[in-house]
Length: 468
Ligand SMILES: *Cc1c(COP(=O)(O)O)cnc(C)c1O
Image 1 (cartoon, protein in one colour):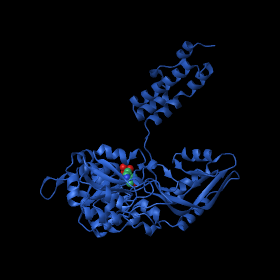
Image 2 (cartoon, rainbow, N blue to C red):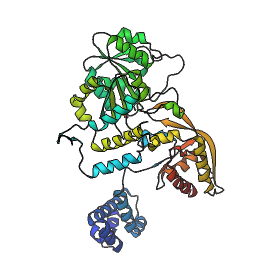
Image 3 (tube, helix red, strand yellow):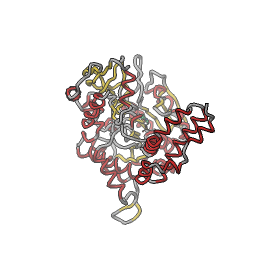
């Protein structure tokens, strides 16, 4: 048996390897440095395997015969993107793991226009002097929310995400004082956003009232004392309490807050600018409802049902927003010009009434029948083999992550099974395609819901099924 030293001697040097014609050509195209790195990586892996004993003499010969391809593959691996598009066939419209809201075309274009050159991000064109970046969405948010029936002139600021918005609001308005929250709202929202922890970090003192399932307005009222700074309502974004439950509605909290002169803050999360009943989602309110009810400050995400870029928006009374804006934390949590560009373009689509421009809004509004006919059309182009079976069945889409836990939309689903592959294996194969198609598995079948697939991707899904 060959010793590892003999095997090591069989390996070419990096220089020798780069003299192979195909690799010399590759270096010409992709740059010598990148190809040298790839060659080093391949040789290092082989040395490792020889040391571990997993490559014997025959193995080394086989590997050497394919070493140029291995270097080419390594180069491709090292120079491709880590963050890349996927096809979301899960039917979950807002999927936190898949980047939440896809942007409106207008927002994508606007990012390009603003990013390509200099902008007036903090420059007041009228006066020629230094300006403020938060003016860029103030005007449109004010219009949308005032038009929605606000009782006061709405002001807004934008920070990195809704978690940052909550932290900033609590720190600005309640540091050192007490904030009253129902025990039924002490939630954890994905990625370790826990209300009691955020409260502690903000420097505000949590004053819990009521019980997990029942809290009444009197519970809030009894807890108010001279240290009370805010009443906080937190949306139960990712769970529901059912059965013997009670929670004051937001109007009752606003009435109490007015009587006691303590502002009420609502962490709404979902950020919907629509009346969700128009898409068949009842028992779930968005920003307009809270604004109409007279909530003093609302926090919500830009990339949930609003359908814009990642952001946390704080909207509310002028004097409270001014306090928030002057907090040094605001500077640390602010967003960049790309976010303003995308958010302003998204809000402008709302102002123009182009609701279907926002992919998440469009996806909520597509009818089950339209999804059915797209699913059937997709299967028509597809000649099922004896091994692969696909049929269109009834199902439910989810609005998803951090918005409305229980809200579903009726849909049609392509259910796929294979004679030789398990559902999990089918799911893996679809995910490992170039387009990376992400699906659900239920009861031994792979489920494809076209609600969250862009129509121009239907062909790709069909092709991937064909090649299974
Ligand atoms: C989603 C959500 C958050 C966190 O929002 P991010 O934008 O992910 O930071 C906070 N509060 C509520 C109620 C939410 O639904």
